[in-house]
Image (cartoon, rainbow, N blue to C red; front, top):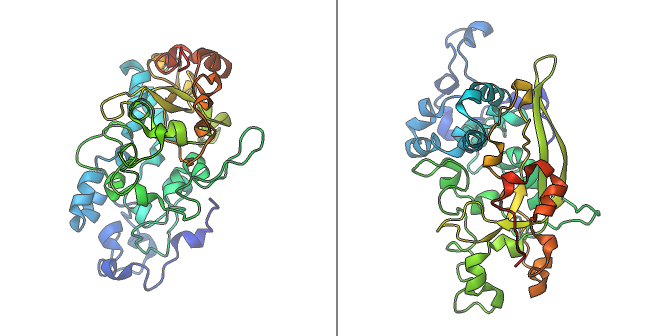
Length: 369
């Protein structure tokens, strides 16, 4: 996403706030001092990104109430994996690293509906106009760009240079993110979730209005029969290759600026055992994605900050945005059955990340179906 010029980030006009918010004025949300012509005095107490509970909630009470516990606001998914891999002794050092490198991923109401996310440098979307729904290319993919955006829009290619087509939901119609990802999912539903795959699948391929007849009496596709539907996640058959990241390390520059380095990402397709199998996600086999973590990801902040690294897999449950009706997996029965090249085997793990075998015991496939 190209950066904005400084003036573009803050440019307003007379209609900038829109009809609903114009009567509030700037101070009602951002603070400051009225009744003065002195710039320094006027800007005392200014809040760049207002607290939704103190501003938006006066009109949008129900949305703000659930947003405060949403993953966009709490970043609970980060804490879930860090607590699994670390312990109380090392937690303070990890939180210092988290504050420096991860906290910008927090999203407030304004960072979706008024401006670009802070992680992308901010900047108003449209002269402070409140966008409902927000433009996905400036907000959703501003944060979820390196994987979701490139996968969904067909910007990736395989290791041998073959282009991977755009997700069937993007091409040719260009479905926006919020067609599948509802406002309740974005803003948070009642209840507290510990990571994005906590609770029932939302969205689900077979939800009402989408592919709800799959596997039913009117479905003529034999592969949608009960054994497959119960044992295999939809993406196992219908996902194209997607991105995997490795060995991310965080650090501060000599000037104190946070940055990170990681190994080059790789594009491939891989099936493994389901690490979060439950009545809501009953499948034995799912697609997995390697996440950008290593034993020494936070070594800059202290030694062995992830002492329980092996407690959680590094090839994790995934829902890639590379869906196709027909894929190499759907060509024939033997395209999957007996095809070891599609599965996360111990040999594959040793080749890609030899020190992560124990961490991935739960998802490694020991016998090719």
